[in-house]
Image 1 (tube, helix red, strand yellow):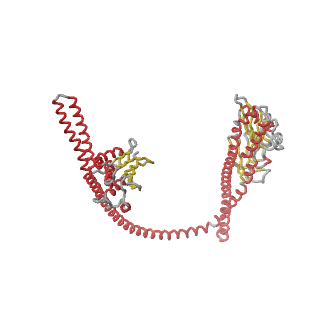
Image 2 (cartoon, rainbow, N blue to C red):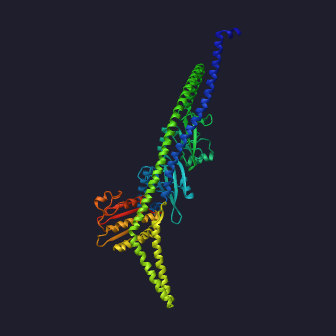
Image 3 (cartoon, rainbow, N blue to C red):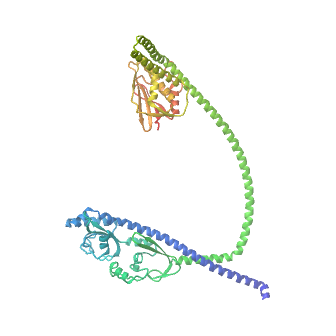
Length: 602
């Protein structure tokens, strides 16, 4: 024995037997694992297909279940049951015929309280239900008793299986008048399921097959029935024309069966899903024998090839290891080179970022200078405007001051005469005039103040009042008629009070100067609100803006005044733009029209 093992031939035979045993064990083990995996995959596929079939069946049932409920409320139907006549029967026959065609129901018919069919959708066919007595059918007496019923059976006239959905029809006094019935046949659904090649059937709560892709299975059972139950089903459900024997199933592993007849012999994965609406259950048999055989064969071939190529795989693994080492060295060199490039690029980016930061800082400094310059320009425009209206404002102040002096002298005389009431009236008038002078000076002080703040809610009417308080004297001095439209109560815009007044004052000043040689000068101020925007319009009946100036109206130093600088409109437009609004010139056949458009304050 030792000499045999020491010889080369003996070693090869030992190796051959060893590897043969390993190959057999691998093939057997792989085949069993493949069998289990294939069985599990077949069961999963069957469950998926069952869920899809069940969804289709539920959809079909839901589409037809509402039909009897809707028809039970039909006034024509209730009228026929209450007072049957030939015209009502003919009208309902044609209505049922059209509904059956549209809803794909097999037949729709109505039974009176005795169970006799009065009208049916198949009234003009040889198998017409009209006049047939159905009082013995469960769907009739159960609907009368419970209000609705569903029942699957063979038709006594047509001999075709189908689901009967019925609902009680009650009169105005609640008394049952009859039953409306819709029969649904599932031939199209069975044909669709049959095309998938997977035997499918639906059973009721007793396990009786109702819908099936294998016609010979209909009204067979999935298990033994009690004698009394078998007799009732044979009479009510199959009209004595079906065999209630058990289906030819042979159980194998859990979820797997073999069929002994009726369909091609094979091993099937079995899955089911409930149809709770009717107490049914849908079953599907997915052919899996051939698939399992192929999976087992493939697994055994793979196992044998694996054993045969084990030695070769060792060499391949060694070769792959050498390649992995070479690739690792190349990767390391590439990583070092990449790091070098990243460092160089990072330095460039850092330098560019520093330069960009310097440019940003310079841009901020320039922007601040520009903003400061704009603020100074706006303030200069304010002071220039105040200079233009100073004479009128001074006159407006001098009048109440002179009146104050007169009333003071008068009050002194009244006091000497001991006329306290008259002196009190003079002093009251002095207070009112002093208050008016204070309002004018307060407005002057607020207008002349250098301000800059964020946009806030500003009352439109208050801003117009403040502007007119300053420019009003000049309007009266020039004899300009002011037409002021009504402003909506408590209307506010997003702006800044003093700068908004400055814009309106500039527009009014321009209008006053444009009306210098107009015989009947008129300025109109109008306010409108639309789509969250407030428009303040200032218009006059002057000569308007000349075409030469109109092209460059909002360009600095553009003006048609003899002593103007051409900055007022530019400054005003920038102020309004800072509020998020716009100042525009509106073409008009007469005079000049400017609009200030601002956002309405929330």
